[in-house]
Length: 168
Image (cartoon, rainbow, N blue to C red; front, side, top):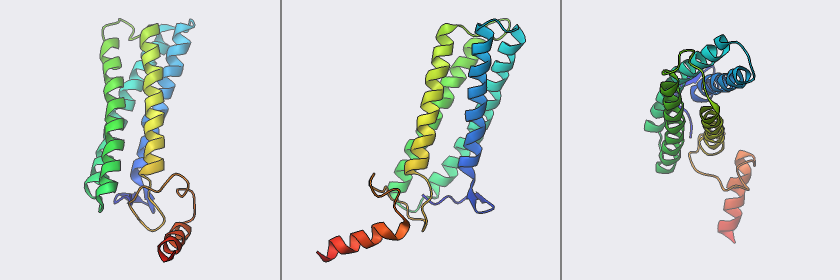
């Protein structure tokens, strides 16, 4: 899907998506450090990384919504909607984790929440892969799902292949 929102020729959504992913990953690293005996300030820092990741994720999902709403083809709108739903699911998971952590004095975590954070980061990684694999902009702005074998081919190769198959 060709993104409508661009900065210097690059789509904005993938750029915005990296900030929440990095903040969520840093929160997990800080939580592991606090579970291994780091000062309680590290757990508080992890909590605020989660909050900043949620804010950045909300902005990224909003931009994805604009791109999806402006999709020219139904299939592109479908893949954009699926990617946006995956992103929203990740944000909801991390929001629940942040709300649970509000009850603790140092905003720390336990082993169960840490496992949920790992699951959320895994889901976020899958969502980013899905968006890049199926929703990323193509060379000529075509908004279709390419078959798995043809996604990595240059833009004109799959068109020539289709012409040859139609002629046969």
